[in-house]
Image (cartoon, rainbow, N blue to C red; front, side, top):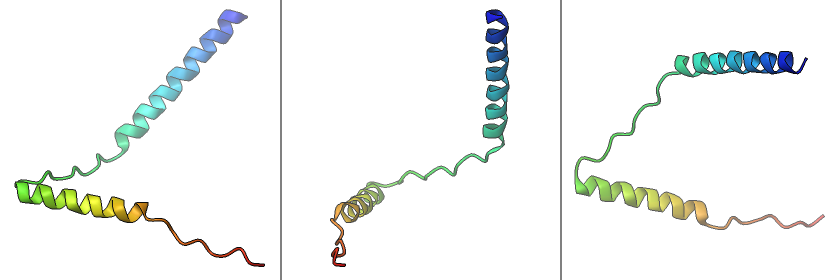
Length: 67
């Protein structure tokens, strides 16, 4: 009985693996981000990312909990 359960588990894992492989292969590949071609573009990209991170790290105003 124990061997039968183990065989069933292996078969189930194989089926799930095949389904995952089929599902991921049908997805379109994500568009690659073009790397900056000049140092100036690289610096601009770094500045844009830094500004985005700084804006995301700013504390948000919370509404008062007045009933």
